[in-house]
Length: 69
Image (tube, rainbow, N blue to C red; front, top):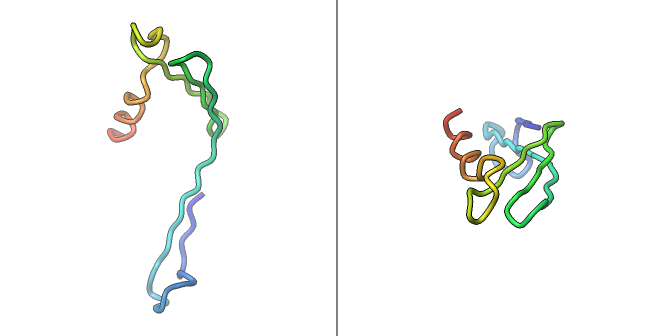
């Protein structure tokens, strides 16, 4: 959720304050495989072999993709 408006702690009413709240749940399925739930979407991540089983993109791939969007 994003909100904007005058900040309650600001000396000037011209100052705009914004906050973003993101909530989700994550759980570890295997040592390197995780699942998260966010806004009704399920996201899996895994590490490549030999650390993981390469069943999903690694966490860094999600982060890098988010920068491209």
